[in-house]
Length: 89
Image (cartoon, rainbow, N blue to C red; front, top):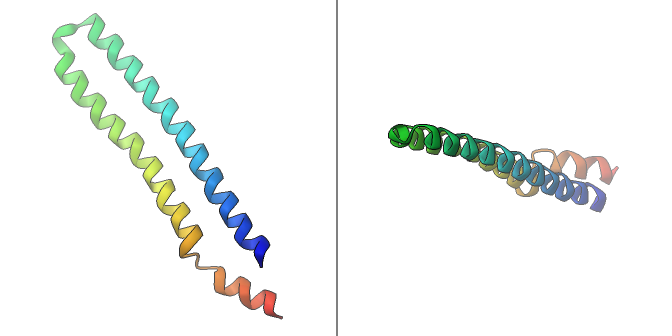
């Protein structure tokens, strides 16, 4: 039984690590492109900034979804009772 909960912790941590790396890369690429666009056309800076911020919010929401799933795995895992029944036999 302890192994099951240990694996739940490992999977939740690994999922958050992958999400953080992916979101970090995605956000940095978005910011780089936005800064390049503003450098080429400073007059469009306001529109580019608005679009960039919306895009960054969408990217960050992916990390939040992974966090929610990780919390479900840790605290409200629907398979916990099934595992306990299997191990009790």
